Image (tube, rainbow, N blue to C red; front, side, top):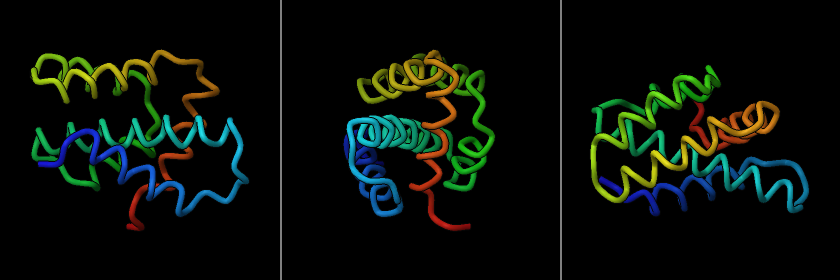
Length: 114
């Protein structure tokens, strides 16, 4: 099982490979947020024997309430990576709705084509 840090770095690379907007502070922010989102969801998926298809479904659904539930599951699972993944998901889920939508949009760039 990959560490949260490894999952985050891979997600950043995957997202940047498909982002068409020019580099800016705002783009960097959303790439970072989207990488955190994907990494946390992939970490959760690994712990739950879920697949990247399940992660894709969650990202496409773009549901903050589901993120909050997953964050709770991760927090209860224990371990430093699980707690950090939980914290990241909560930070995204409780953020402003316009930023949440944009984060999910960026995260879709990091998903493998189905």
